[in-house]
Length: 231
Image 1 (cartoon, helix red, strand yellow):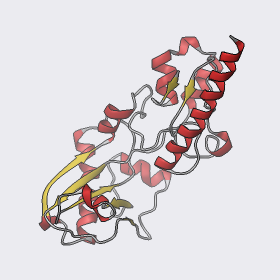
Image 2 (cartoon, one colour):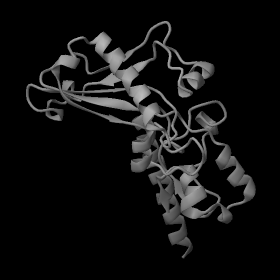
Image 3 (tube, one colour):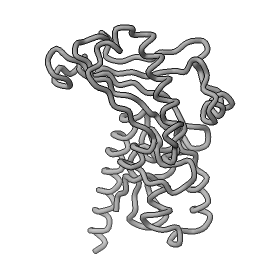
């Protein structure tokens, strides 16, 4: 069995923690999720942004844990970092001819139980910064839609622990659970493998997931050949 549901939902919900040693269950519960990445999609009646992607940052936009926690509690700072992407600038088929779609997002808590008021706080700040940097953006918007950690969790990752579920890339890439310290692709249960950003890959975001897919596929193939030979 190969699970791409994330190590925490796989162990604690899909399989059930009663099937694992308690020390392993504690290890899985202690793993720290990455932050969420709520954002906005702007559908424009004409192209406004020339670059395919970029970051909007300033000397005051970097996150510290204290600053992030204050924002999560409702004390939104004046300036935060924004990531944006314009898919049609590298793939003309990503938007109707003569039009443009712009994606923008920022780091936030990953909790899918975020309230409507909290979601609006992040979305308003994303709008504010995008519209300040690209003043032609708001007047060319035909429609726009927002998404939050609740939407991400509903699509990709069950919530099994407080504050977890709407992560941008699964487990946080922090000391103690990144690089060579990432969880093993092999679960303590024989024949169970984890694939995705939580295990088996290197790099950032999609690169990490693809790398994991290749590595796990090779491991599963070897496992299959070994057990076929034993039979």
